[in-house]
Image (tube, rainbow, N blue to C red):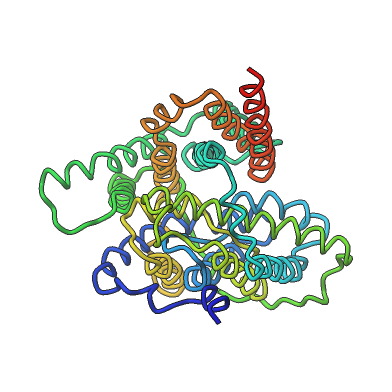
Length: 426
């Protein structure tokens, strides 16, 4: 019975409800504001449409928050998953997302039931730190279209895409209004905590939330010309039919396995990084990897069967959640509820938020994730650890998450064996 119960939600998940719910609600709203344009963008980029992205953020975000194994994880559509889905959707159409999500979700659940989640703990520390740095760089570069008010130009990898986007923006003429909003938002985000402490403000309001509100009022008051979020989809359900997909069994299984492995790895690494950010990665409160897999599998199945896409834990939104002082999964649940409220009630207000401000918040979050001060200390360790850290970060940017983790983990263990044998010989 204990084997099954550890994979299911428990009353202890909400043991601190009375103490933390207020700041968790505020943190959840902050994450929801940041997650909104990302969900819309990832849905459009995949080819499934803005509604699919929003459906994924709401349904998958809610289910993963309840059934997942992390108290801090925020789930939804991600850039990494989009990269995998785009070629499949282009070849077979959007109808393929339902069977793909169903099969991939079942695979992820089976990985959790068979206790495959613990394998992620075998990833070496330098690889984990390199993954964190690489993801921070990827998140920052993904915001360039928003902060430059430019279209994203497709490239072979994140680095090439970022370079082409910047070059396209320069050739078209820099959008200085959006750049000003970027600078102002970052200034507010990084100075507000100091002002809050100096004024001894007792009510905690996340700096990201304050920065977004400030930028929105600035644009409205001075009629600054910069892209806004704009109109939102009003429907949160789309009829799907597994039988309408024309994908073959072999192609379906190959695609589902790719999606399942990406969902598992990205979610577990994101949850592990979240625990490190709040310094509980070696405590009893740390995430439960197998339960996390079950939660992510359920989230992907439900999301895909109501018109959404496969989902994963999202390190950017999870980091915003932690930086907003979230203390429990109530914040992730609030994030999903807020997105639902936006669609039903608040869309007239949300449409006025400048996309450059949201991009700036995520760039600021990337800086916090990378933590330059801690990075300097990490690079003072052994040469092997330092090289592995930097190599992992570089490969995450150039080759993607799965290849970076696989190559650098194998390389680290191989070099460790070689160095041990060399010392024995000497």
